Length: 139
Image (cartoon, rainbow, N blue to C red):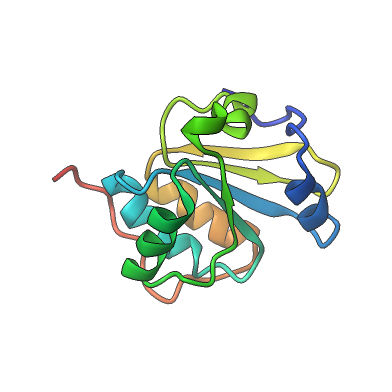
């Protein structure tokens, strides 16, 4: 997996969104319970988040609606296509988050649901979550 300080692999959507400032890339799968907990918190950030789904379009849209995040920008990185973006970033688990700076450098990486990482991202993006981030407890 790529680490902080590495250049982010480029793809058109990343180049476009970086033109407006730093972005948080959030890789997820709809069947992942930890992703179901994480994505609603990411949706509360005022700064750009690009959610990268490893599922098909219809299933991803249902997931976003079910968890109250229908307006989050989504990019599909499907198994049928060989997960090209996930593989370029070296993803082994979801959710995995990468904060990418304007120059294309990865400045922060978080794997799974890490309360301190989410709170730190909220501060880095100058955002405050409207609810406290819970500690993750396996079900």
